[in-house]
Length: 237
Length: 237
DNA sequence: TATCCTGGTCAACGGCCGTTGGCATTCGTC
DNA sequence: GACGAATGCCAACGGCCGTTGACCAGGATA
Image (cartoon, rainbow over all chains, first blue to last red; front, side):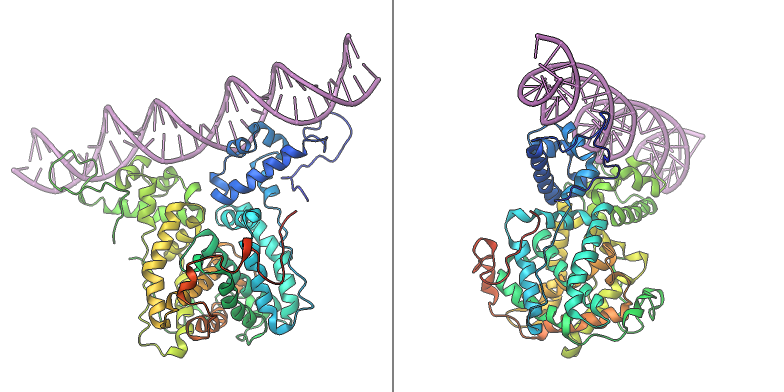
């Protein structure tokens, strides 16, 4: 496991005045307790509502220890949001079943008990905390998109991967964070079956024209953010 | 527009000692300025980071005025998150084009300039603030699900509506809040085209077995949150 | 036994927050 | 012009926050 520090991690193991302790000895237990408590708090309450004091109390330790081990609240978050999606190897999967495999993997990732707080941490913090959003983007860019676009193939691979990600993140948001019905209470296997088709379509089905170069001008064809035809709704008065 | 107060809204227009001012006269401009500033702040920074003082400063007014008009920060939020999706009438739409119409409406709703902060407010606050989550559930339940399930038809109408909602919310989250690439930069019309097919499938396509009664037991068939077959991945160590 | 480093506690600082109450000013109405 | 309500500013309170620095126990080391 990699502990990501804020910025100035100690590089010289020699000399005394280094402010942060070296790997030391058996402080590992405290470090881990703090990390577990932090993940639980960040997952349950987001970045802002989580207090260093509460994390420390949960870990049965003083708040100043958290600062010594992780430098700052930001450093603690960086360590707590260090996530590996552990995506399965998709190369050997029959192309026609990719959607189902991905959907099942994803649902089981979230459904898997309390241990996987890390994913909720990301979703809860990313919407309000820039560090969380950046971490989310990084994981998306370095883990999700490459793995999925590799099997989606073609010049649209990344676009397809993005759509798959949006679909799955949307379900995670509705089901595990917002608890919107009826998605929140649907039984997992039905959910997988429902999602599999859409994911499969995004991966291997026909896609709209446009291609990668369509990314150059976000609002191309839409003047002032209004669609060229049809409904032009407004919210509020 | 309805101003939702926290709890004890004044009911008797007579007598003086009522703590909150009656509609009064032309304080309407200040009220509106506060509300606009609040929406912008809530949308940009979420509930917790938004301070009453900052909202007041943006509105060119003292913080205590915010309290007098809206009772509390919570009351201010309730007023700022009072949202009408203004869903179009779907009854007259050709069934085969429902997906496209819904996708286009939704994208244009978000794409429409600064005025529609209200939607970002909801998405930014709902993940960390219980009041925001509750408001989101309410809007979903009373506006989105009824309108969509009416045209989806059948006993699975609400389930279909939920899936559509998850799909569209996922895109909104990735594109407008998290700014995940490549979804964030895709041109709107391509995005609509990409989404239309999936939304259409959720509305009128084949769905997995299970039916409404599948909602009774969330983890039916999955022991301990693990899928009965295939990949059993874990995140972190 | 004397000396350090390590893991840990305790008390405090400065700052920002939501919220309150008192005081000034403006404005509509008699 | 007088008066009272509506509108607004100012100063403060109590509380919680992230963060810091001084101090202490204990075990390894010399």
